[in-house]
Amino acid sequence: MPESDAIASRPPRTVARYILLWFLGGITFLLICAFIGSFFLDGIIRPRIEANMNGSLKGYHATLPHAHLQLVGLTLTLNDLSIAQLAHPQPPVATFPVMRFRIDWKHLLLGRVVANVRLEHPSFHIDEDQLASERKDPTSLRQKGWQDALQNAYPFKINRFVVDEGDVVYVEAGARKPLRLSQLNLVSDNIRSIEEPNHLYPSRFNASMTIFDRGKMSLQGRANYLMKPFPGMEASYTLKDVPMEALSTASRHINVAISGGAFSSDGFIEYSPTITNVDVHHATIDSINATYTHRPETEKAEAKRIDIAGKAVEKENNRRAVNLDIRELEIEHSKLVYANETSNPPYNLFIAGTDLKITNLVNHRASGPARMTLSGKFMGSGDTNITGTFLAAGDGPEVNTNVKIENTDLTQLNPLLRAYGHFDVAQGRFTLYSQFTVKDGNLNGYAKPMFSGLKVYDPQKDKNKSLIGQTKQVLIGTAAHVFKNRQTQTVATQVTISGSLKKADVSTWQAFVEIVENAFIKAILPGFDREAGSAETTGG
Image (cartoon, rainbow, N blue to C red; front, side):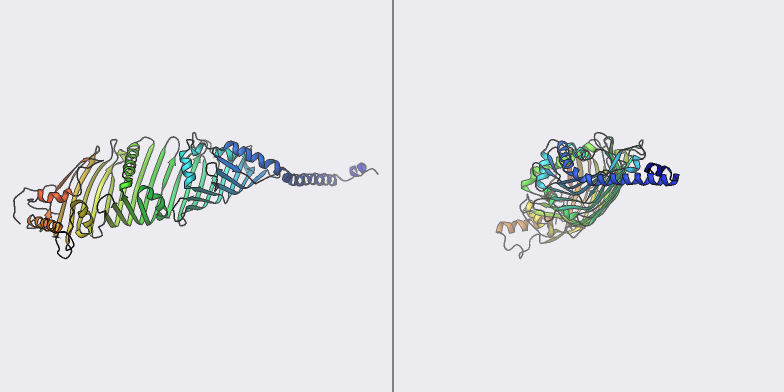
């Protein structure tokens, strides 16, 4: 009996099963052939992908040792891809051990052909030379073709982007250790705005990372990657225990030395081509030692930085579509130091045990003034309390400040006294009351320095000084004694502070000079009393 007659004579169910087995066998055979054939395509695909990437990149070069397109599932895997800067090719700025592209089957069933991409353990390395070269390049980093290079690796639009355990390292010459962001994880969905197309930020993302080996950061938000000329986003963020000392090498470029300290914050950020919103709910810097050093060799650079910062603040004050709001900023258990190396001898001024709190720091006048309180120990001994307000204004900030420093050990100020008065003291206590305001770029106010228990000349301490130096110490001590207030046993004066914000018309030494000029003040009372009272001539 012919085979065809045998098949025809079989029951319908048997025939259907026979056809199904042939169909499944054929599909299996084709899949096996596609799987095996995929490996023969690697030599064709790899150079083509590498060339397409390099055609998109500007100032950078991609090297792709291996690429594999699995025809079963249309999965493309790139292995050991590296990106090098042409100006400084070693080390590569980015390496990708595994970059994998897949068809998004869920959206394919809905009629949309899009892809998912996953980067496994990518690492980014930037050193000082590479960063300097990038800064000099007139082409911005956004215009270097990174997005096009990624898109050209796979023919379908990317709709989901995942980073697993990424690592970012910045190496600066002279740094004890590089700055490192590790354990970087990122998931971003709906990049092509397939879902919720009418939402301002239709894409969702969340990210987390470890900052400088210890700090933690997390982000949750939404984005619109299709905005022009650059993507927009909004996100809530949390920062915990970020070590400030890691920034010490970078901060030295602006004359700031940092040791210790941890930074924590939480808030909300929105950034797009049309608006910028920064809402810091709370920010804390704990146990930091920060020193700003004024040096002869950097005087011009320091002045330039101050000028640039002032212009930046003025530009953002009351600027439309830019909203900056720091609800609460605290610096706790810290030491803030000003070091002046331009004087002879150099001197330091510092506040130990600093607790600083600023609330409602905003860039729009309509939101009201910021408020500031500071307490600590001036020169490690003087009880210090400073309060004030700050209001953003079109012609510059408006500031009102009250300062109270009581019972500072005056010997701690001897380097300052020697620098500006060419004498020092053997003992004494220093107290200062001051009020000042800044408005329309003008500084106005007063300061009342007071001295008690003052002993300028000490035969034992001053025995190594010249005869002229010892005589000067005696004369200064005698003047302080002659002009001492009988009731309070203090030497006091009041100094008027006035001038522009850039150059106030008062020097540190002026307060000491005016001891003689205002020697007949009737009474100096603690507190912020602006009235000096009527003068009378008193003998000492």
